[in-house]
Length: 279
Length: 286
Ligand SMILES: Nc1ncnc2c1ncn2[C@@H]1O[C@H](COP(=O)(O)OP(=O)(O)OP(=O)(O)O)[C@@H](O)[C@H]1O
Ligand SMILES: [Mg+2]
View 1 (cartoon, protein in one colour):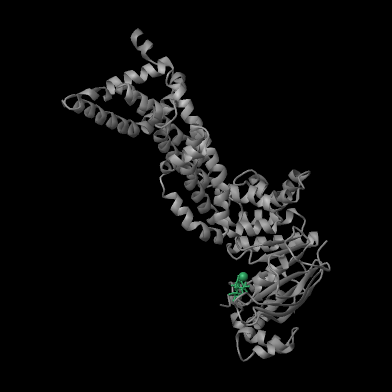
View 2 (cartoon, chains in turn brown, yellow; view 1 turned 135 degrees about the horizontal axis):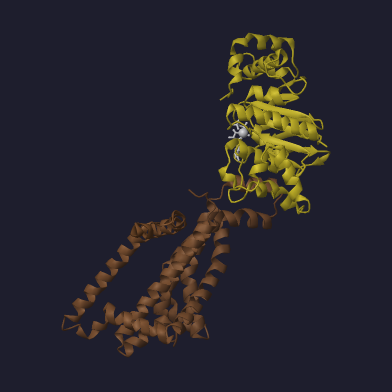
């Protein structure tokens, strides 16, 4: 009797717990497949570490394995040494992207709007686009006073194309009736841009920025191999020189994590800038 | 107050086209008058309406509104299109407010829009995104948007043709009532003879190649119009006659010559009596 009484739960408690349970259920469902993917990646990494450690030729690199890497990663975080390179790298990527956006969006709007401009710029832009930004390195170093400026230039020149073309694409998809109606309602060019064109293309612009962030983040690391004495690329190069392979791998991990986070932010922005009704 | 419009000998060539799309169009519209433009597809109705809106300049002749030549769009004459073309990233209120925002008239905007949304029956939808509205509701928002700037002239290019029959009739009556209350002049293009008879004070029948006004019919029936009344049915039949006449080669010269309803065409209207039931359906002269 007594036992039963203690076991029976107050129904209101259950009710109060229900939202929590439902949340947990939803979280489990949302996370189970990503968790599977992450586990797969770790398994592969673990197996790779094991293979390296068991091969005489590569034994020296055994600290690439998850164990040493995660330990080094933990050290970096705890000691706070991880933040400085991240800050330097984000600073460069941030400025590079800022320039790319400041140039790419207006350029894209014009290319999307004026067919002639599109035709005029097609060949030179496609030509320039296909040149690896790193090929500009020597010129950038000559042209800019500081290494920082040179790297920002390289990032900007890599990131400007996806932004330009995504923007142009968005402008071309604008329903001509929207412009006609705006015109009819007495919109001046500023109104047209602010109330019609920008909201109409916002999602495309952010989609372009997402691609640009990807490119910029990839270009950043090799660009930091040269000249500078800060940033994630430098940290990797430095770790290699001092044979701290666990630390090197830890920085690779950091690059991946930050890159993932930047991408996630962009996805958020794309979603938020979409005017399409949910569902 | 409505606008007086004079269309002075408009002739228009689209670039690259040899034959003129419009030729010597000459029409006067009194303040507060509602005029229907009806005619075969491609005869230049939309072209003419765009000229009234200032969205297109005629190659020859000009449009004057209250004596001033129309050279650019203005919130004082507003055009509504077949598609509502609302901005999908905005709420109903924002869409309806746009003309006022563009004019910089933001002071009593909220109250004005509240009033307008009430007039078009969308008070409870004011803050929802326009994508969640039905086609008829969207066209109502477009109507509110057009009326917000207190236009003197409303130009409608087949504004209700994409709507179902009930919504269409409701909106026809609504626009007519609002235009009459506010004394707004209206020029509308339609393929629907019943719509023309229901809304217009005067119907202009256009012929094509080149686009000219081939016939004209006044509709003197009191508002609100009863669509089943004998007068209404008669007018519809009569208009069918004109409409048929512009299509039949044999009758074309006669119809072109008659500027007003003559007994002859009246007879023709009777002759086409069996087709009047069709005229309830939308007639497309294609
Ligand atoms: N931008 C343009 N450039 C060249 N020709 C055009 C243009 N717009 C229309 N036309 C031509 O002018 C003629 C009249 O077109 P318009 O759109 O005014 O006809 P409409 O009477 O409104 O037809 P519908 O009933 O199908 O809407 C058509 O033959 C069309 O091909
Ligand atoms: Mg048309």
